[in-house]
Amino acid sequence: MVNKKIMLVALAFFLTSKLASMEENMMKNDISKIKEMAFGENDAMNKLAELCLSIGHRLSGSKGLEEAVAWGRKSFEDEGIESFLQEVMVPHWERNEESLFLVQPYLKKMSFLSFGGSVATLNNEGKVEPIVADVVVVNNVEELSPEVAGKIVLFNIPMPENSLEGYGAVSKFRYSGAIEAAKHGAVGALLRSITINSLNTPHTGGMGYSNEYKKIPYGAVTIEDAMAMAKMQEMNIPIRVQMKLSAKTYPDALSHNVIGEIKGSKYPDEVVIVSGHLDAWDVGHGAFDDGAGVVHAMETLSIIKRLGLKPKRTIRAILWTNEENGARGGTEYSKEYGANTFAAIESDLGAEKPNGWVAEGNNAQKEMLESILAGTGLDLIGEGSGVDIGPMREHGVLLIGLRNIGVRYFDYHHAPSDTLDKIDENEFKEGLAHIAALTWSLANVETPGS
Ligand SMILES: [Zn+2]
Image (cartoon, rainbow, N blue to C red; front, top):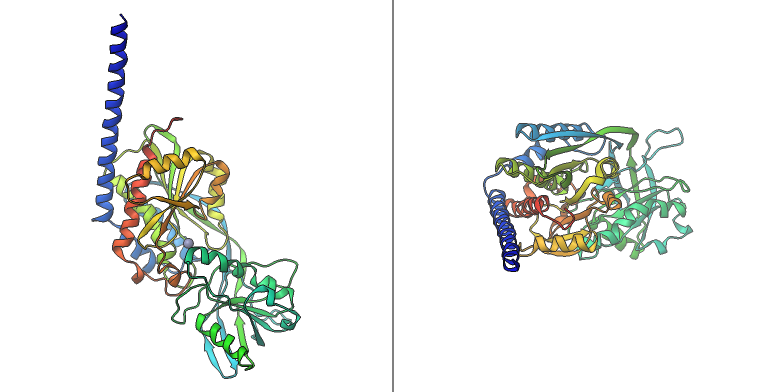
């Protein structure tokens, strides 16, 4: 009797482990098919070229962004992937005509980009009129003094070499520079472009104002011009510029998150998200930031669909709206749908060779992720996620960001040089292969709670 019981238990154990190993083999098989298609024949480069070259710029509130929304939706439909739009109200700022001239010690047109959200240079009647003022170069906020009153402040703060952490260290001045300069009575502000390498390229980005201080015009000069003006000041050469901005902020505009979906067969109410942001600054093609991430997400779903694979959990590819100057797309999604998200991946660091993953979550979630990543050649290398998926942390969602090597990323970031030709197809597809494989694993992993 006892022997029979032991035998039954042993048999059950044998069958369960046999089933588990069969499932593991199937999973390995699916992943190798996914990776093969990601590296091989697929539609990623075509999609990216269409997004970059057949639609105008994609800043929030623009016609181009809503054309990109329609393009994303149609692309899902053409491949037989179910999709829907989520309405999101987004900021609407337009750059319009702008210029910056050095007028003293000599006349020279400088490469210049105002920051998104900047006010125009307006006279007392509210008409656009250039500001002509002396420039004071400072190396940090502490150097600001009443001496800058009535002048234009240039923050000459170099980006540290370690680009990703270095970006955070300097981008805070893009947000606070106009506030800090206005506090001391400056009439305008300039920031040395946030990049390490430059071919006279200005880099734009989001900025902030405080209601406590006057809103003054603010934008980026190139590294070359920033360094030249710093040297002029050191040589006691007076510097004077003419700054003209005719930017305008309009009421919030209607935009959309584009959501493509393959329903889960076993846990349809648990959602795995793979995503990138559809909006981009109004200067380049937005190929690195973030056309590449958008296509990583779209093509992940397309590959799974083409291979006829059925995930256990629902997979959503999300093309976020308004990452760059508001993060409203991610915020609205989290409010409406965040609670049933199992895990979310964001690709928003261009198309270079992948270097690892960063994640946010509890210990159990991270252990699960590490066990999935074991042997994939791409490890968990730190804490972090993505701007658009970030709001879902309040729902306790496992958040994951792809980290590329980042050697060239900031050369093109928010600059006219962020164009399609910068994409290396092999590196771009390597990112796709890792993202698609991780998405598939997360959509099928059995957890103690499931
Ligand atoms: Zn981005």
